[in-house]
Length: 263
Length: 307
Image (cartoon, rainbow over all chains, first blue to last red):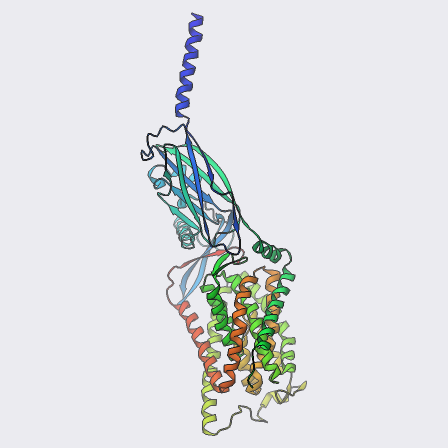
């Protein structure tokens, strides 16, 4: 009897493990390059983010069992949004709102629009999608925008302006499965991408549930002359200023003496 | 060919910026102005962050004004003494202007003040220059007399103390008017972020009554120092001077300035003044238009550092 119980328990646990094993899908991912060099010939680039679903039960790449979202983010910084209004016939900035931190760059690619398969609370919690990025206005500053509609207006404007600068990029069908478990997406880094570390976050969804997440990092750094000049400008600003002026004066003198004068 | 700018953090077409530098340099050499009032808005229009545009165009101004000033100096068209008097007073004006900017920022009135100052000054100076230029041109055509200066007609300014002889300008006047102009112009420059050539030129002609021949050279000569000071200050305080952008602009600039100076020699002083006035008016109209017309998007984005 006791032996039977042990065997039964063993069987149960084995089958339990089997069930758990089958359900325990997870995601692993990486970027095609860990380091992007910004040199004087930098005109923007593309990075490939790829990954795989562990224990995939997807019968074919087109089955759509899983939804994958890839978010690539630049480092956050405070921003200010200003709004003009008409005062005495002139359009001038009358109100502004400061946000404590906003990703300098935000690219999102997914297997289909994120609102179709995940509920807003989950998206909010993970910052998936432009509308779900955490935007907290600072209390201080000259803001007369306190109520919710005002805040929403500023948030929408912020997203719109960042999209126009190509620093917020969305690709709603940008993630493609190329096997039962392998997926990939290309993320465009525009020429004006702010220099700094990038974080790539990959989310795996199934039937609206978040099954797993994987984070990977890409370094975006100046190299060569770019790096040298940038460092000089910030570490030896006074010298940098004198060198700039020296260059300008020399160019002016060379031109003045090089050109033949007729009179 | 494109080049990535280390401070502006953007990729630009070298040909476009060379051409821009050359065009503004031409204007600089022709009229004896720095050209900052044209360069800054054009750079911003091409996507350069405003704080970088304001700082970097000063380096371009240094190069084109050196290029032009040397030519004028070799022709004896620079009144160094006058420039020194104006510059010495100018530093007080700059300090005053920088402090005013700080106070206006604190009160949240800076942007409006700058826009209004721009439109007002460009508008008034442009109009006056055009009117005076046309009158002078008419006088020159009918009478054949060319100088706007009539000796013994200085009125109140003749009675001021501290007289000094300005040989090159053939003037014996009190140092007070040039110093007041120096303070005023550098005060305005500090607020507007420009060299102020378009204010100095008319002030030299109509207030100081300097001969037209030395006005352009003297203005350029003193702009060299104002712009040098501004470049170093911006690099030092804001780290916003892009040396690569400056290099592209000033290569075009110095070449353009040479052609501008050469063209200026073939034109009459009155014509040059009328053209400068028209140019200033166009810029004023453009800025006024932006203030009045409903913007495409009432929202705009600012980085906290640059605000």
